[in-house]
Amino acid sequence: MAQGPGMVVTGASGRMGQMLIRALDEHDGAYLSGAVERAGHPWIGADLGEAMGGAATGVRVTDDPVEAFAKAQAVLDFTAPEATLEFAALAAQARAVHVIGTTGMSDDQTARLAPAARHAVIVRAGNMSLGVNLLVQLTRQVAAALGEDFDIEIVESHHNQKVDVPSGTALMLGEAAAEGRGVKLAEVADRGRDGMTGARRRGDIGFTAIRGGDIVGEHDVMFAGAGERIVLRHLATDRMLFARGALRAALWGQDQAPGQYDMLDVLGL
Image (cartoon, rainbow, N blue to C red; front, side, top):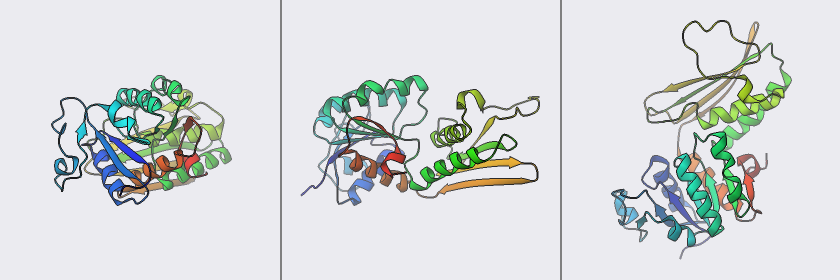
């Protein structure tokens, strides 16, 4: 018998979608109540387990999120920005916790989540892992302790199918560094270098992205001063850690008041 809150996975056929489904299958405190894919996807109408190459689960893939969300207490969403905004409105109508791992959202798109958060819990984070969120805290503290004599560089590496640059995690780290220094990231971010750029501007926070192979996720925050460097690093070797973090967020959100939260809230950091 199913126990705990029912959860819907959007983008069920995707890399993270399938990982979330497997994480739910292993979890005793929650169950998969629905799977959503875009209209026209070949999985629509199929049994999810069979579509994934395994045994039947009794859950059929649908392109109707309204129906799926109505039966759920949480929505796990690692899709695309505009799809996430549509899902946010529907999850709010269903009063389901909406866990958002979607990256590449603009400031305008993020602001458009506010109406949904007045009616339901939204937990949004560029990275769901405990280690990365500890790294965010450390980055903020080190940036606050060191002055602008130390240049800050954020280097991130991911697999060759990732479509957004910089990664959501890199931007989380950049925001933390900027907060530590009491500045706005938008005013100090250096996200592109090519050609005769001239000397580095004092106080800038630089970003470098590497894409290749099947790299799950690697992030370095370098504080480079005269004669010394401090490097904070996180290496992810198993994508399942992000799925488990998302489940933890969805369960935590069951007891919260409507509003927008992040993984620092979930982890009590």
